[in-house]
Length: 448
Image 1 (cartoon, rainbow, N blue to C red):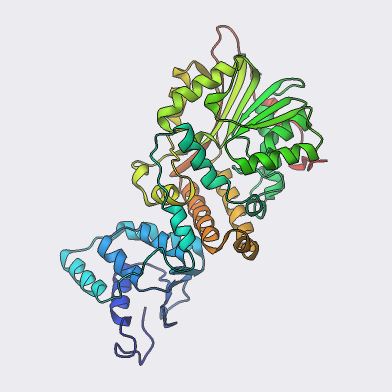
Image 2: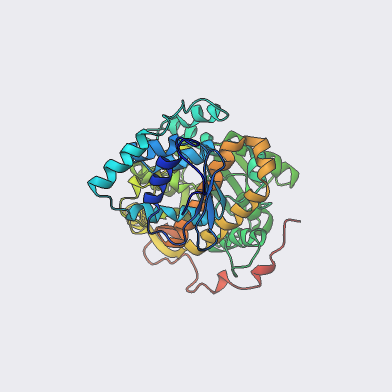
């Protein structure tokens, strides 16, 4: 990476320290990215086209990165617009692995620190065009997972804007991984496949009562009632999702078969109320300490011999709590989200009295889903920014690109686990999975 000829420190006072820092941090990286500085100076590789361009709008980003050594500062800078990427954001996030591999001598550290101190000090992070968002993300959660804190955490993420989510989700508004029969399936067809696959796993029958814990915008309860004739009830902690789901139920004429309410799972009433229970993408919000109570609640409301399908994201990387990705998600996206590995999840279910009937890993499906969401979010950028602002668009863009890479790398997984309360001599599902795959699901129709 070389600077344009004729550029001098006198002309651009912060130029040389910044270039030295960046050159050292990117040393050995191939292919090297281009760099555009705050004064529009472009530094590009001499020998080949750059895969992407890092745009550094504020030299204080480098100063803080070197002095504090916290890579989360790069994500913060991207959200604030102080750092940007032109071109391949997936490739840019690959820098994470490069930075993790850097080994600096004490001499290197002293040189970097000396150059960093020559750069301008950062301005107030709560000033500027994103100051409102900065105060929003300053909110902190405790991982205690009380009813109040869980409600606040759900609102933080899901109550951003129904219209925002509608810009990039499928028409059913399924906000969990789709089910692809082929990698080139459309998102819309893959999400319909996912709804149908879930219903078939639960072996839904007309007249049965289905509970959906964390029903979102009502996709599963409406699909199950319309396509399988069940009586469905959904619960959510998001007021905006609840409002949308109620309007949807009325529009589809399902008031006699589908109900939804604002309710914490811990407040579900009754015993042996439901024939089938589904929890799709809500598990991550429960909290590890609360899982025994969560399982106990499901067992209480599920009739003997009924089926429970739990769909949740797992973390398959040691030390995941302290990763940059986890810190970013807790700060900007899912406050108080907690993941576990699939073996621990199954062990907890068995200790609660459930028998594991089927386990399906959907990791490649989520990677494909996230790339579809990213493409749609990018295509709807102008409308999304008008709806929620530039900073929130940047958060979701960065978050979903990073998650796609994590699923592709195998450090994050997602599993559907089908269980039933253990009963001696009873096997509540068919002997094979044949019934799950009959018919041509690639042509499952859109809602009538």
